[in-house]
Image 1 (cartoon, rainbow, N blue to C red):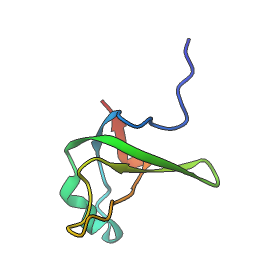
Image 2 (cartoon, helix red, strand yellow):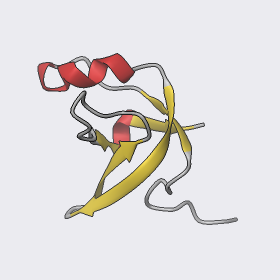
Image 3 (cartoon, rainbow, N blue to C red):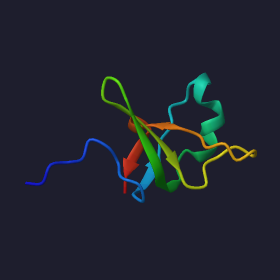
Image 4 (tube, rainbow, N blue to C red):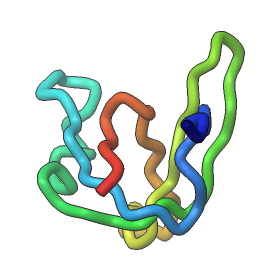
Length: 73
């Protein structure tokens, strides 16, 4: 059996499921849609954060998504 990677690799198609909490208000526009992972970053404690293709502010700044908000397709 092949081990699952600890992170989602760039290029992987994911579905976005952002929780309905005030701190994620600006990310709600992406909920329910599928995007490809653009990049990822590992943080202390095993947490991963991701940027997704075409998910950025109107000024071109990428939004970051927590790993538990994404599901591989």
